[in-house]
Length: 89
Figure 1: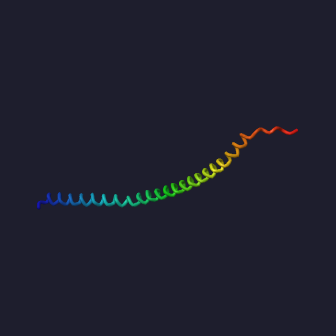
Figure 2 (figure 1 turned 120 degrees about the horizontal axis):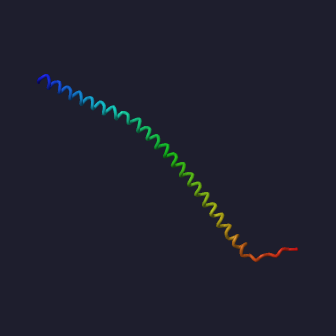
Figure 3 (figure 1 turned 90 degrees about the vertical axis):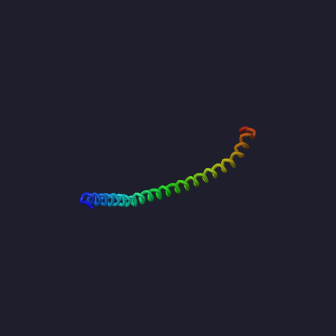
């Protein structure tokens, strides 16, 4: 093998090794990115669960208020349809 071909082969080998090293080192930085994304997803999941609990609590309160209004509606209608009383005195 001539000297030029040997240099060219070594240059190719060095280029492939360099490209592989850069590629592998770039993958190592994704671990931190994935950890940040997972942490953020956990925070969002906690917020969503909290919001769901708040919504459920508000829904129960609204249902209770509706039941109370329904129970008062009959009494209001009864008072509205009752004959007027004349004042004493």
